[in-house]
Length: 161
Image (cartoon, rainbow, N blue to C red):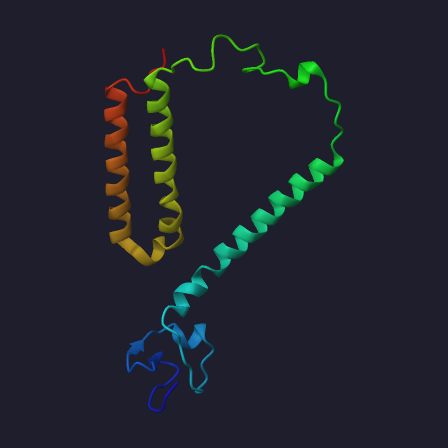
């Protein structure tokens, strides 16, 4: 903290002569009267450290279990195991047959709604900070998604023949 700025107020003066008054700075940086230099964007980067750790641990876990299953598996190749199959039965028709467009519509709808649900995670993480505005914003988001689902349902995109 520079002279004149108390740790209780959370006021920071950056090298670019930008002054920030953040009440949580004294807690987040452990300021006890010493000079604190904050790199712009550092606080935002620190917020993603937990996500990065989770991603690394998840990837290491997946790699470890794939390697262990590859090392521990017993390989006994046979002609039956090497043959092609679809859902446990022999394939019917040619591989170049056309699929119904309904298959692609259902697949695209699944991807769209699956990706849209990802937006619930960051919203839920900061729900208390957003307050009523965040609740109304998510209500509008869900309403738009519901309207899209109702439209797809009305057009028969969810019916499989």
